[in-house]
Length: 605
Image 1 (cartoon, rainbow, N blue to C red):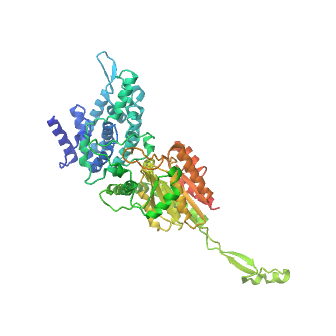
Image 2: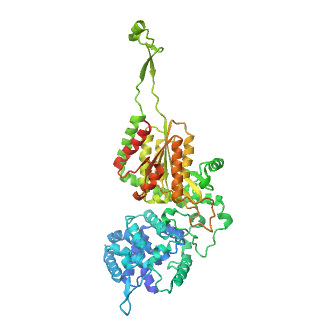
Image 3: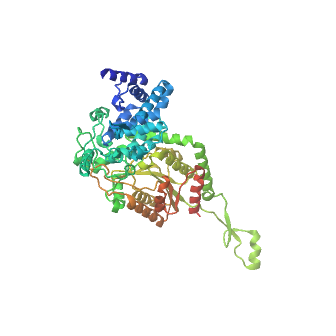
């Protein structure tokens, strides 16, 4: 056994070309076959070579205790690493190709069933094995029918979800995609979604099954990766509470989370600390940046806006600036990494985007920027027009003077509001690019433009200001700091922006909202026993109706509202309920500038 472990470690060290660490071999499963295990160690070695393992281990530490599906999540990491990195591994070590083919052949030949002594087939797998089999079957191009195999369709959905993202190569991309999958499929109490593969067939009557099922859910599953091993990956002084950040219920499909599962060796945060809004505010500040508004201003806004369904919600207004310390450096770096990713997306499509900016600018220029022409009208005073004197003598006409009437340009302001909740994770580059296109066109004509993003964490509405009306055009690049996280309380965000817009002295005020039409903020999601925060859940029809009401209120107060749909086509009906006919769904960037330009042009008629 010891010799086998040493061989595995040597394989990992050789491929990684680094002997300065002790590899975590249990991160990958064992297969009881020397060639199969050898291939897996080749992949693990390449993972250590190209991945920021410190960042990955921190990610694993933060998430590992929040799921009952521990081995299933480790299996996902294993197969996803294989899917993303095996091709590059083979390029640098061609011999790995043969081992990979042999590995797939053996996995698929073994399958998910075995015959007993009577020749009867029976399940011989757990959910983790089923996940691995489906993944490798798909890699081999084999169609998988979950009903025929007797496994949960959720397993196939998960595999499809990850394989659609197998172009990830950097640590940041891989961790981001694993995080999204974790939130969607593995978060606490989603166990029953995936574990339908184990239908407790061996149990007796229904009562016994129910009891066994309940016991299985309540008891943390033992995993090959011991929880105690995680502690060494936590940075000195790192606040566990700061890592207990709960993402949007959009990914957890509204499942009621009973508790947040921690390492049994860890003590939960004291109730006196965790129930304090000051403690939550510190977490929010560490994650999103320091506040730019004084306390008395925040208190006034909360008293005015956070009422009714929004009672108990707190506000945090930031520009994403950090006083860097050990508690927030991870989040500051993640925003910087996302900005680089967003800018890369923009550069990859820059020709199309630049054309859209120029087209939108020209459309707006025709309506908003006038030539230095002057209208001349004849009046009874002004500059004498000699050629009209005869009219005074012949017809007693007194309008023989010319008066110049200079046309004044209508003053307008534009606010751009971005939904920055977790459901936008797959579209961060797209949303940032759309906002940047509109902002560039507007600010090139000196039109006052403000760009804000909003999301919710616990009972805090976080508003991130990328640029204000009077900021220089160079500030537009700050929009690429857009990063999706948390949930969304659209109605409160709209009412806040409406109040901010009221302070501006402009003839016409326009707000453009980029969202997926799915307001969703489940306040105490996963926090029971840790954070007893104020506020009511903001979900389903209640959230849709409240958001639609705020859009209607803004229109009543003379503001012009346009929704730009950034979600999935199946949610278009929700967008229509919120914005009525005043929304745009732009699939083709070649038409983006024309549609936005047409809307603003129509407002200014």
